[in-house]
Length: 284
Ligand code: GLN
Image (tube, rainbow, N blue to C red; front, side, top):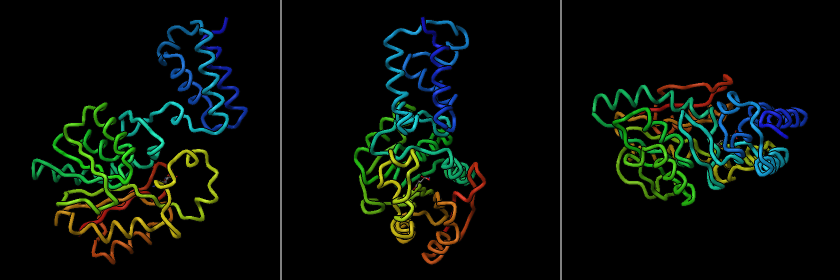
């Protein structure tokens, strides 16, 4: 008889032997996913017997993980800013690093909401909706428009808005950056694609292999999207508004220059959990 604990331990050992970064966490997440049990079940009932169907299900997931698929792609969801977000092949997997952008802009957005009683947010390249939905969850007075060039991504973002009870304050528009956007916003945010063509060609990292290339590729120097955003933002930003972008860790000076040349002033910056430059904020 195989218990859930046996499965957890054997999976953990296989992941550790394959040098996965977080063997214990991956093993637990996949076990929970494939057996329909929770962490608490494992603690309360470590001796619970696994059915052959559960063991087979786990074996399939383990094979995918050992073949390099990120654990959250297998689960089909990832947590971001305390929200559980569904992933799809059309969406970038939200990274914890992006929470730095949300944390950076929140105090300003909160002040706007306090002053105006509302705060309008535009999220360019919304993907799973991560940034917009995190903002909405933290700011009950805010409304957000999620923009993406992928209809599939927008469908996933809408599912995530509904699942997190934020759908009444979240709308989506299919648009190539600002192309089909009208009106002004208090806050414009984006985690645009910023990987250079060279980096993308050399990337064998497991996560990016499963992300849509469109969500990663920032052109020859990785800065294409920033040029498009900076040159199109002014007519869509409230005069007292803020624009915040995630950046690659070595892009701070270049992105700051692009926004400066487009008439913006620096208004803040943040580092990610690893201490690397990760987010910049500008005003008009
Ligand atoms: N942070 C992601 C990575 O390093 C890139 C996300 C992006 O291009 N916006 O893979």
